[in-house]
Length: 102
Image (cartoon, rainbow, N blue to C red; front, side):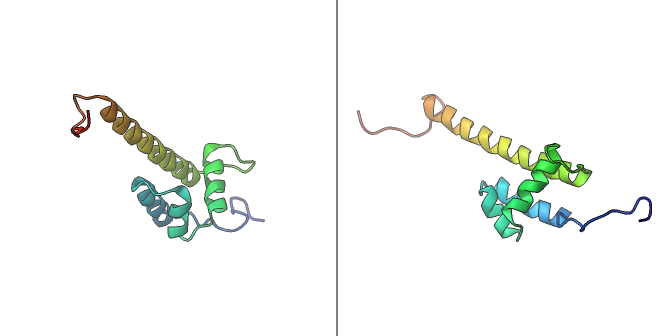
């Protein structure tokens, strides 16, 4: 084998696939739905996350690390939106809905 030559199959994780999955996650779709829309098996995308997070036996690479970071950002953003909605619902000053029941 030549020095510097990659072994194995080339990854199906491309910039386009990552962008499609991230776009679906930003729309608050589930990870499973986002993977299905990108025609990527969920197990494959989960493997990319493990490799990007350094929890896989195989070596990580910038593309896997970038994918893992983008997915993590989407999850964090989604939780922040949920918390913000909960805070607004609990705060009568910022809650714009008016209760008609006493």
